[in-house]
Image 1 (cartoon, rainbow, N blue to C red):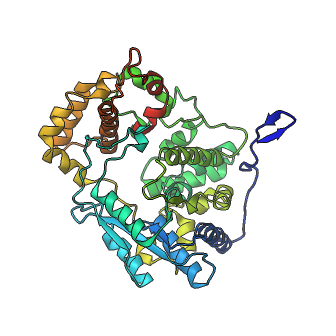
Image 2 (tube, one colour):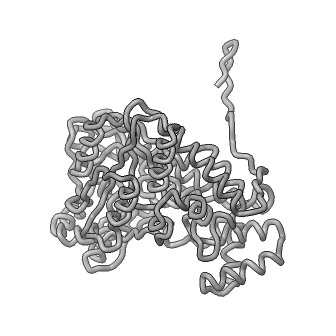
Image 3 (cartoon, rainbow, N blue to C red):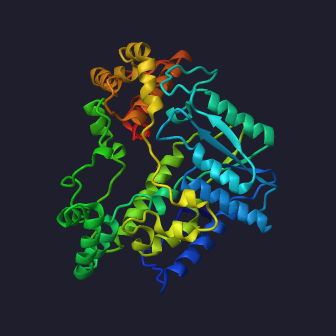
Length: 443
């Protein structure tokens, strides 16, 4: 913002350059460049006069940050007194237990970090008890044992900085799809190379090449004609009117690819970054105790590099996150680099539905989100019945729905009555609901 002579002007001081391309003669040059920009991204975020705390989940992103930070500190270029880690585990989860993986990193480091057991958590807790109202659903977080242990960890060691691996999966080729690469070849009319890539990826994906070609071409179709994937469909228990008002937010603000202009893979990368921005902005600022959350994978130089290299450096047939795996050999334990994609089916949440069945069933019949026209009671009850019977439902969205219910009840208990018809005690939710603030929580 520039203010001069009673006039003001606002302009964007920097943006990604779609014309920038990085091309090397060998893979080793890409790997060296990635190590350099990633090391600098981690170094920038280590600056603190107290020890830094890093999330260590056992996945590639957090493990890479911790291992690279250790390398920098060992070389004397990490501007911090030390680095500690915090890890979450649940031994009751057969497909989602990180303990075997984050212990590999701890063995390499030579000491253990803080461990938090999630086995005793209650994911479907609707009650919200606090002495002050939460301004938004994002700032309404039910006190949990895991949260208390995390705050105790911060207070005990005086941590003021938390390193997060958020963004790594999205920007380094975590989704093993050839579609952006095929879209680039289509946009540049490289049909001979396109036919070759279609053959290779069809064998890898075990799909007819025609299906892959159609999937690549579909990105250029008008959104009304593009088929919406099941993962992006709104939760089935949301009211149809609420979905229509907030369709763009609920579907992730999808945009049609432009055939002329920046490469489709570049456009896809910007879309992924926008989604990450919305994810980060929904997180509440920590205050008890205060700390700063930093994201090495969202470093400007890292993103510029990853957006400018050929897509085939990031994802190759049978090689998800190819560049990152190659570049970090010898830095990150091989068990992490060779690990298959982390599982996201959490059995604890499904088991909790059976354990708390009577309470959840009773709660679903008297929901404030239903009285406000957000959720259809019968549809939500049907989803609970399916989960109770062992069928798969959008568990995370269900947890968010009950989280918003807890937020509304917390406001009601504080004397702020939500209403669609006229304000009560000078508080009104109509404009808030019709904006995308609530729909962001569902998406």
